[in-house]
Image 1: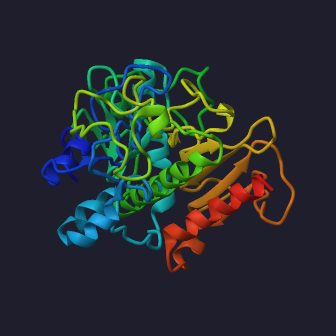
Image 2: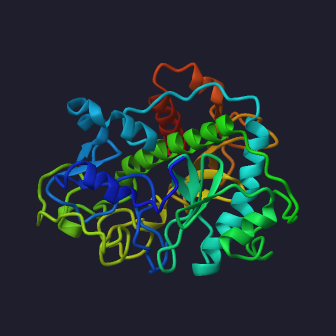
Length: 371
């Protein structure tokens, strides 16, 4: 358990001695105060001449760098950037811990962000989940099952105590979403440390896979993705065609209109066709407690959510899913609980390459949607 105010991108940049412009999966300061996302984009540009990222195909990958510098392996593995460890069998206390942390996400972590900018989406943070930075540089997150408010680590006994520590009223306004867990102030929050670590690993694995899918999907729905030299003066494919050797600048948050006409910034500022089909952002939705990204051709009935759930009433263990906006027919769509397709945690555990198995499942979902 590290605690402290987190600046993951700066930490990675300093670790590499400032030799690379870096991208990481976790949110980093400063806070983004512009719509529509009010959050940094982990893959956004513009990019420096030497770039390292958590996805294959955008600059150099952290995995590639670890091959040259094995001393980076532990750092990358803990943050799901590269040298990724395998998902392991779940501890027996996983389900009650998942429920406790789902309750915390719905009624404390997401409401803290919503009070500042009206947004509810959360992100993977090291060892768990949390908000992007908001307001004057605030962040609320959960690491190893403990509540971290602006860098201070807490172990609240009840939900009401957690809300008080976060400095907010308990619960989300009722018009925002229908919660899946009760918001009683005296609700106890039992957390098993091993189960909390397993949940953090699940969300880290999910973010690694979904950001890769999001990057790969950029070419499916746009003739000239933002970030190509013609659209933004910077390349998405490596170190070529860069207009400047831009160093890391902590004053320029990734994903703002000024900084990110360069990659997958939503549905605005696009000159290319079919903006409605573009990938959105990977977010953790507090009411469902799952990580997901949406893309696909909506008017053609081919849009879907591609996600990773830590489990729910119909699925006692974590699972990956493709949830089409419109029901589809065929053998791939195997999950009657929600009318989509799912890949079980057991299938991932038995896979030789868990990440590639997950990506293959999602890619099959894309192919089925577009068939």
